Image (cartoon, rainbow, N blue to C red):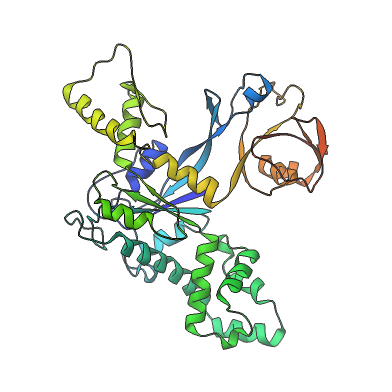
Length: 397
């Protein structure tokens, strides 16, 4: 799974990305600090099945702390988007191309209203953050529309004359963006744009493109700089309908993770407090800064971890599943207990998990066993969050 971190320049995208992944990236208070996309690994938390089985796990792909698994998620920080990026303004083409395979987007918005449309600094409270949401969504929708527009009339006539399925042809045009036929079908149903494509207007194509964006690139709003934002701005953002909005302070999260890494404090991402470390004495400046952060996070954390997990579990409706090779010992072939954790879409079946583990295992899938019940499960079984599954596949030479 890949989450794209998007937004206009200078809103804290790279700070959010760095806080989420602890990757070293350039961070500066001016537009277009990020030129090439940064890739890193963030984590989402899920309960480890070790407590259910009364065992101690040996994590391989996802660390475990106090019965909580930190499951990896790929994150992508791209160049800032400015108005008319879909036409190539700023670094727009690079930005949009990098987003092709993102499963979901976290739109980092400057909730303080302290940056203009191009990312230049303004006094706090100057700009309406809702404008940033509207413009970014339009840019991505126009990008999708620009792909559909290429030779559209020629394609529409071909669909009309040959009686082809419109949904399949549109999906084919947008396959590089990870768009599926069900995505297109749902977009056509919600917009009412159906029938003969030779009759579609420019507005019809835009409406369809906009709906495809909403369905194929679901977006969460990270209301960043919430620590300095006017209360009315946060209230306005939280009142948005049909959006998941998470107030956050990426700067505070990054400071906490760096302090934890340096051994100055003990901090678990997503916590509402941190602990002192024996033998470590903070200087006056450090102590004052951390107490300021503490007073903020005790109201609900920095929001960064919450945003990532909301994108995974609310936007994408993912669940965690633990594949094993021995359903009795809960081990892989190396004897490691509950070694791996995978994220799959709710509604996925055991063969979907098999493909996640390895393509060959998916292709040669025979059946699966639920380690909690010790019973075989059929192809039609829907995996549940926290399932421990043994996959049985044909051996290949």
